[in-house]
Length: 198
Image 1 (cartoon, rainbow, N blue to C red):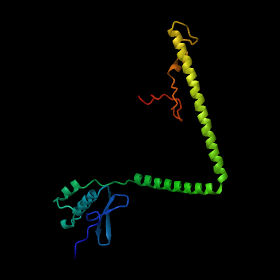
Image 2 (spheres, helix red, strand yellow; image 1 turned 90 degrees about the vertical axis):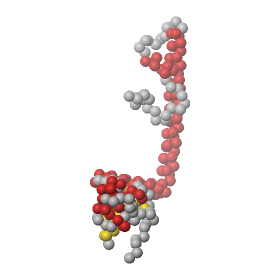
Image 3 (cartoon, rainbow, N blue to C red; image 1 turned 120 degrees about the vertical axis):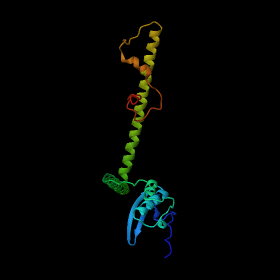
Image 4 (cartoon, helix red, strand yellow; image 1 turned 60 degrees about the horizontal axis):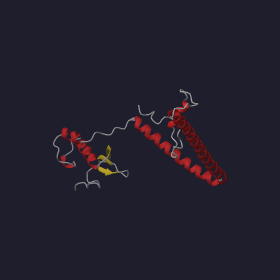
């Protein structure tokens, strides 16, 4: 009987997957023993050889001839990938979410096709909303500039020996440090930027 032809991966019992991984398996006539998927063809071939040693098959059926005992084969083989019940459940949940998202896209495309007047209304709504947000941000920026200018003028007055109409405990003194730049975040909630630096 001629020897078995090696797969396109270059190793016996290892096939390349479409996703780029490498799948290892051993054949017993019509029966297949799956060894799992590995990141490289070399890892899959080492796993194949370790299993071949465990099953007591001849060394000529192995990919590498640099190991002489089962323990050596196990030492160079990669650890098996463990797919727990939680891994399978997470995979199933991701697949469900993907199917739901695809169905949502299909339904929304159909809705947009059937109701172009609603699509136009929605686009108009968001356009008006963006304009209102821009106007609000500009008004807030002008208010910050006015408050900062007032606090700076009061500080200059006090430094020159005069008196301010701000009391010593007045929070308006903090307006001196207000940011008045134009590149503020759209979703800036005014929270302290240093709050995460504990």
